[in-house]
Image (cartoon, rainbow, N blue to C red; front, side, top):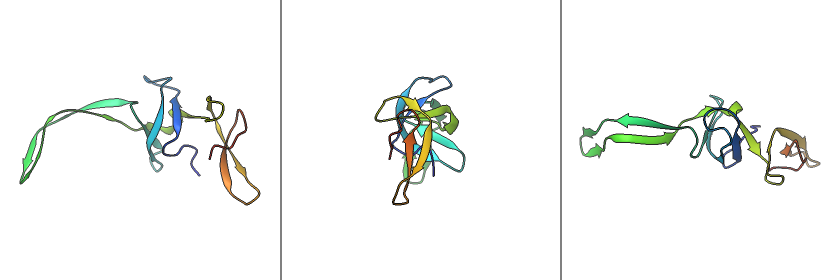
Length: 107
């Protein structure tokens, strides 16, 4: 089970965007990376292309680049603090994520 999931609110703990809070757009689990909205913005210079009927306009494109999942911490919805994630197994056998600071279930 992953500690960070899509649509979680996370806080960046290292790098140029340290302290930023935003939601997770994608989790690339095999590469151990995460894409967070409006964080780690990069600029790509793209050439205009004309191949057949479709035309792609050139210019500078800004988008969110993935970065390592260890550079973010989950923000607990109850205590509103960046926290480590623990796991607990409920009585019915379901495994849930829990906040290490307040002990509340996150899922």
